[in-house]
Length: 332
Image (cartoon, rainbow, N blue to C red; front, side, top):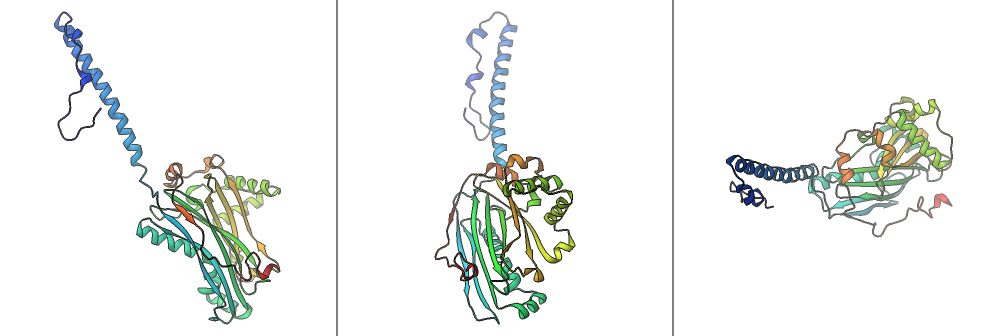
């Protein structure tokens, strides 16, 4: 069947009344023949049009994604810059997107870079007055090492996971490990927080805690601990917030599972560790396990329709951190 343009429609061949119907005796039968023939044609026509309409409507909800783009990992690198009263050794890896809408690209590249530089900015490049006072008293070296992996990239969504090791003051007694992540919309530039797409309540935290405990062979959290964890996910415990910056994060895997984590970054006094400390917990959960907690969000339609797209490229000429790299002095 052809779909016509303008007001002129082609003759519907299947609407013609068979000759044997016209040859029936009596005007009534002739009229009934025409009537049923036209009705049959109308049913077929409407059915076909309805199919076209449904198809076009379902497509209308899904804007065209970006099939061809690149995500190139780059590195912010400093080794003993001599610009400060202490030494600095910084190797921070971050992703840079090319090939999407220019405005969105600029917005996302700024976000991806700032996320990687979060602890560097806090302790080193953009310190508060309190941090400046702390630096004067305790800093001999500031060191930060960030590894970034693009864990998922489709025509709509991109996930970046950051593993970080940083040492404010001294790369022996102040070594802290943490994680953070981003999942962003390549069409709108939106960054999705965990609480944007899931109902993070007590049941959600209990599910997450059990997944973490099962992985690490630990006991499940009791009622009191679940309340503490829930407060951490929502950053609403003032006592904890005075010592740590609580962050929840999530990213997608290649199988479209969810890695959901909770990290505590120490603030000032809590940064002294004696030995390396990792205050991060995470669990891998499937969509089936999380279905009951879904919130209304534009994320979900793009998640369902997402297929692999774009290309993620490794960092070229990546430098290893002298203090915190795999063979760094801190581990010797």
